[in-house]
Amino acid sequence: MKNNTKGSALIISMFVTIIIIIIAIYLLEKIVPFAQDIKGVENGNISYYRANTALNEALLSMSGGNPSLEPSGNTLSNGSGMIYSVTANGITLPQLGKGNSEYDPNWSILAPGKPVQLLLKNNTPIDWSLSYFIFRVPNLGVPQVLSGGTTPIINWTLSASGESLQASGSQIRASAINSTNISLNTTPGMTLAGINSTFGSFYTTKCVSPIVCTLKLSLINPLLLTTGEVVPYIEYQAIFDEPIPLQTAVIETQGYAGGFRKNITHFIQQMTTNEALDFTVFQ
Image (cartoon, rainbow, N blue to C red):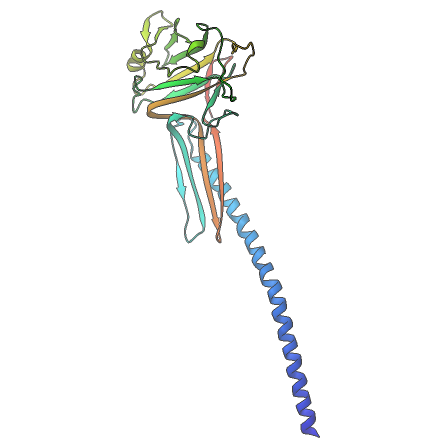
């Protein structure tokens, strides 16, 4: 009788143990993925904060007085850490896909009261016979042409230290918009002292190290189409034979944690121009 009782108790104990094991396995199947999800959320957040930390470090590394600097950093180790890089120079303005035109990201805008101002660094002089600008009316699917023909549309000013060369009857005219690559190399101008010079000659003699020149392009007349409509801005591209500081630097960062990666792309305007007071501010 005692043996039968012990046998029954053993069977019941084994049965209970099996039930407990089954329940434990079931609970583990539910809990482990949940724990993994929590860990994934945690690593996702860590990668995001690391990408933002990298962005802050990039901003601190950039120079307000020298927009051509391109700092970078990399702390990545065993799949954990952060990376940042800054693109601040280019031979094509804007960079491919980085323009600010709402119609075509490969172009940037020149608008009334919002001139384009470019810093021309001199450690590698620009060959202006190989460099040019292209201006066009935004492409809306139908060709648009500015009216006026010989009407001056864009004024240019090349400024050195205490000197500047102004367009003197050589402003860019309506007929040149949409139609040609524009080189300023042999374009005539006049200094504030009344001395005549070509753009290329002034640049070669006045924009020598350590002097850094700036080129300013401004709209000086309404953008009237042949259809009678007025467009809010024109688009431009510029091609140089040597890299120059971009108007807008691009900061790219990555944060890594536990197999997760967060990417951040941030645009920083390096120079702003006050049309009313006519000065440049380095951001």
